[in-house]
Every structure is written in structure tokens, then in C-alpha cells.
Amino acid sequence: MKRLLAIAAFAAFLAAPAYAALSVGAKAPDFTLQASMGGKEFTFRLAEALKKGPVVLYFYPAAFTHGCTIEAHDFADAMDQYHALGATVIGVSHDDIAKLNRFSTSECRSKFPVAADTDQKVMKAYDAVLARAPQYANRTSYVIAPDGRILFTYTNLEPDNHVALTLQALKDWRDTRGRAHPKHG
Image (cartoon, rainbow, N blue to C red; front, side, top):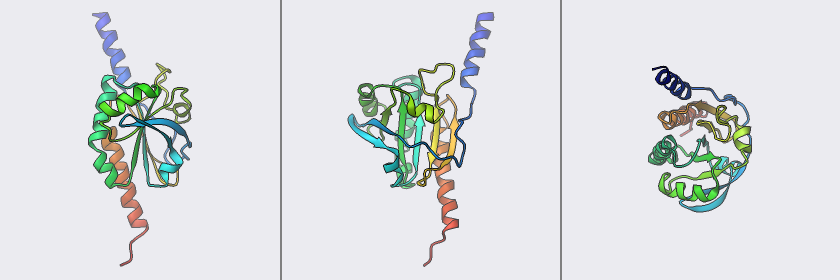
């Protein structure tokens, strides 16, 4: 019975939400990583992506694990909504590019890229290292405005709300910008 209680307590600890250290309004650290989309490798540059619009940067622990597969499917299913909001989505983990070539095709369904942060420089810059297992990224999502400022952060090992919350942050940003810059007709 004690063992079951200990396991339940540990599972609750892992599922408890945490908060990313980079706050809203902070400057997002620039980065360049080797990435894969649909099994095709390329170099992803945050600065270039921001020229096209906002970027949803999400960190995940490891390709082909249960939660990361759910999250990749959720992001893939929502890509039309992200595109309608002018946003780019990029997933980042410590996995090597060979593994991400497969993951980008099967689990991301060739709809968005995933990048290899094998030396964890980007994970560390975004304070997205999983404290209790530092070889992995924490499940953290950021929405970054085209000016390079962080609009939204969310950290929770449960994959369920990352897509809905980042989409809402993008909609809120779009709506705020529309009020700040009314169109003249």
C-alpha cells in the first residue's frame, strides 16, 4: 500500500503544472537549429521565421513517447488554425535529427517541423530543461511575437492544453493588434 501511495504521489508530482522562467514581454533568445519536416532536413532560424509572423515554440521531452506523440498529433491537427493566424510552429527536443526525421513524418504528419537541440543550448536559454530529468526538455510552450518578445508561456507535462492555449494567445494578440492599429477604409 505504501508503494502504491508513493507511486501515486510521484505521478501527481510529475503532472503538476510549473511555470516557465522566461516571462511575457521578455526578449526571446534567438537560435538556429537543424530541423526536419516530413523527413526533410533544413536549418531553422528563429529570426527568419519571425519575419513571417508569430512563432509557437514548443519543447517536448522525447520523440515517440506517449505524451509527446499526443502533443504532436494535436499540433498537426491544428495547423490550419495556426496558418490562419499567420503563425509558424516549431517543436524542439534533445533527440537527434535521424530520430526527428521519422517523428516529423509519422507523428507530426509532415505538417510542421521539429528541431534537434542535442546540446540543449536552446532548451537552457528558454529555461525548458526538465529539472527532475535534465537530459530531457520540459513540456513548455512559448508564443513569440514578430518583434521577438514573448507573448505567452505555459509549462505542464500534460500535453492536453498546449495547443488550445497557444491558439488562444495568438487570437488575443491578433485582436489586440487590430484594436491598436485600426484599418482605414
